[in-house]
Length: 269
Image 1 (cartoon, helix red, strand yellow):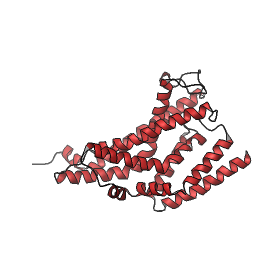
Image 2 (cartoon, one colour):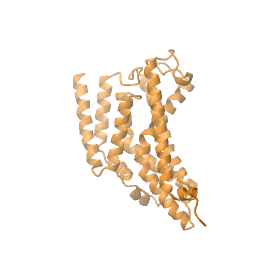
Image 3 (tube, helix red, strand yellow):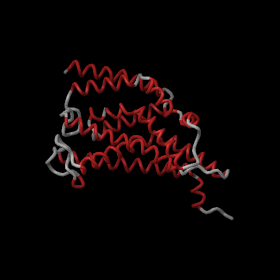
């Protein structure tokens, strides 16, 4: 029987998965661009000022309401999706390919979406922690109403801490797992057929990615949480250090540059 066009397309699992990831990334960046433009147009008012998009008040120096906290959490989560989706694509494509081969042998894996859900769960937890950190920094008057550092000393110390982290064994281990998806799978017992196992595997991979990138994400508090150019620069760096052969050298070189920049800020302050 002749194969239909839909059946032929469904066999190209990598095309479908890659297309879905590309669409997710585009939608995330479209939201961030819209939100940044909306905030810029309002001049980033403090608490009690004009409402932000959707009627939510811009966070300021007072205690956030639950709605404001939820708004900022969503902003962070969407930002993480937009920044991390490109770098995790190789791992997800490998999962989809192995899943198709396993299904052909009558031993299907849990759906690719389950693995992705575990990965996003890890970044959801990180987004929650980042939201709490942002609230704490604003309460301590270390962030301006534009959600960027209001203290040269704070910026310098954070740059130095991020630079030093690029040279730590923890960074080495986490980056190696992100750079070598197959090695990660081998180290953790292979892909799973059961849903809980696949979810945990995606979660674990997400935790390694967080271990690799969390200090880089903290730099958003220096350049501005909604500074699109700053967000894009960090996202591109994260992608490059994971896919280029000299990724480890790239991260260490960046560490030296960040350390120098931090020392310069402290000295200038």
